[in-house]
Image (tube, rainbow, N blue to C red; front, side, top):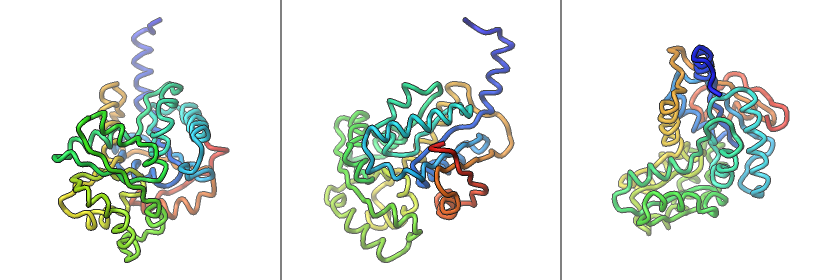
Length: 281
């Protein structure tokens, strides 16, 4: 049954002012949050890092789906108007489950990254780097081939990039050495586009670019996702029309101080107050 127009107008206004929920298994998703904030500076953001149970990569599919649904329930209960799954692992194995159960639009990071890679590539030789779990899932390869069946996709797991990013070793000799080892097979395949398929990897963007060469276009899935979020808000009439700078809230499921310390590198600014949530959220 349709509501009276006056009620609808009030409802739309309140929904537009509602926050966008962004969640990840830890700090990595802050690179996605950064991209969303840059693209949509007037949107309220509610970020959840499940630091007590992350990383999700080694977890079973059933566990990841359970955690994702729990956090989704918490975000919906807090009145978010959209959910962004910043975690590549969740996007790979639980996106459809969350979309099915959520009462708000849900965006993952894999399809936007895949679409951006296909647009950027001229040779159709695309590389993807990510965690062991993300690469093993073939989620990016499948999404890229869905966008362009003729694309050649080469995946490479780079698990050590995560601790290097969290340590802030962006210019360390060890990072360059490890990057050369990981990225050598991709250079052999003569890729012209490389998807940074883990939210930690943009922190190491400069060393990755140096190793693969200036001729390879790097695709940040977070930046591509932020554009999809902006387009979807406009499509559904959900954009916050306020001119005020957005308020960003941070919740974690474990001790906040370490998250705040490391998170500064990922967000590019001080996080302010980080609150500990009950359970997952």
